[in-house]
Length: 209
Ligand code: CDP
Image (cartoon, rainbow, N blue to C red; front, top):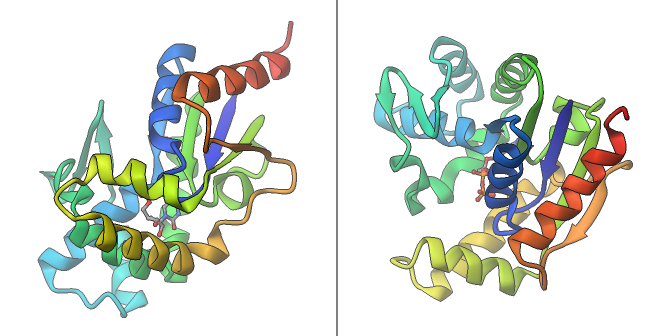
């Protein structure tokens, strides 16, 4: 079974998807980490973030891999590096290139095809896995999303973080449409446990008796 969890930054996707996967015994795939790792490598190698062809080639040549919670690209563990503000600020410019998305989506389908998985991202229910058994779109008020992000990135400061979030929302907007058949959950006033148990319920409803 595939559970697709999409939505904007700070809506609670990662925490919810991780908790859900471990509770269900499903594998967990963080597709955002793949775009982040490619962005990190492109910056290290001096590849222009405007050059979609070069970035697509780089993505094909240097597949992102996961070992447990760790993220690797080009043989390097980039798990911490890719969560820094310098990546937050430019990752959408890498993710917008069609050549990059084609490579990533192909790899995401392959990584998600080995049994039960929870896959989180922006376009999982719409494009990567349109046949997912359960599709959820998480959202929350922007002020709350910024507050949650601030807890994870306290070094940035509230104003800069709110600006970064708004800019990223805008550039991700075309990939942030909920699938027509997604269950939308507004997490503004919900805690992680509430959201996870709602999705668990959806999974149970779809599981054969
Ligand atoms: O955790 P957060 O929502 O901040 O971001 P993420 O899930 O790590 O994704 C980082 C960026 O990658 C997003 O802002 C999108 O630009 C891009 N992304 C995408 O285009 N498609 C996906 N399936 C996942 C992420």
